[in-house]
Image (cartoon, rainbow, N blue to C red; front, side, top):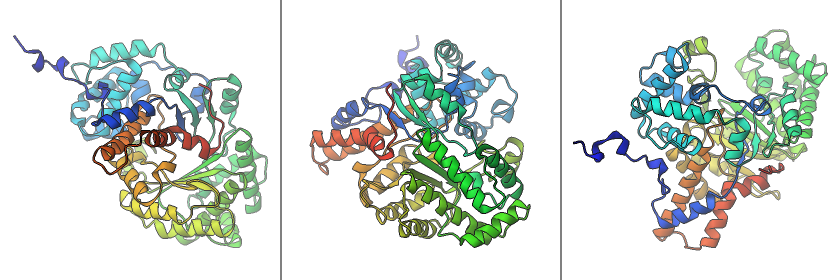
Length: 479
């Protein structure tokens, strides 16, 4: 007779252990405090339309695999055909292909994330593999029938969500959400990336035409263009937004003059492509302008930099952007970024700012740069943002926490964000909180931090929720 020890069903799933990632008693005690805090998700890519309509999903494949490029990359690395990733295979076939990939994901964050989501959302404690897939598929789909976008936000006690929105969006879904009275407050984030695309004149002109239509402002001239952007920024402000965001491969410096930017803008509207130097000057000018808008209205600016996007040109042509063909870039960042912050500071228009670095080689440089522009009455005014994208796993988050701790004030950190398109991704906050408590607990027990539980518990509460609530200044939810 087989022993139970050899049975696959007897293998314990580590994420279901209350002590998961918590190897000391101090860490475990701190986590009981961290777990009580609600979630302030100040940056994500959730769909405001799906929240407004309280979306439901047909099956686990739709909500889990429908837009998750983390899983798509892993499945490609395991030799899964594209038909079973983003292609025409049936939903269950795609799910089964992912289940077959799971045993190969040991030490990849997807192994933890997947099982955290299965347990925390669906109450499924089994380890996902090809053998358990049929049972898990059935059980998860039965539970999914009772869930919706808003119910998941409530389940995870999400007080606030900051979505990511183009200035041309009419924000009608946000207005519907605000009138609905749901417990989670949902605010738009001003993401004007396409305003910088003068080096892609066709895309740029099409976008400017949308901006004209949405704002009602003639954008023939740069003056009109800037006025339209200011008007949309104010509209976001009236709906409660207090955050902007920019995604870029490398940062931009002080920028060119207004006259120079005017010439480049006018030429781009005529379909003329600027030189790389001209494009850089225009983008720098516009980024300074966006900084001034944020400072004028008391907003926080987020900058995500360091991603090398669409490196696989065939994959990009076949499937489009955000489909898993991006990587970490390796550009010089700090000189330009320092010049940008210095320009805004010199103008008296340096807003609060969160800097998200994707290349860990730059962590210490970014952390020290943040320290050069603190002050002016704001606690942690320039934040070294949490590990994101390729770095939102245990090692990447620990690198960020250690750099921030060594060169700044960890106690003032605004903490974790989801940065996801999936309503199932909220266990990533738990993942971060467990790691934070583990780091502090280890150092208490090895004698490098004092065992002052009142001090430590307050610090944990601050990083998990209260710092973000105070820093971003948006009304918290009531859920």
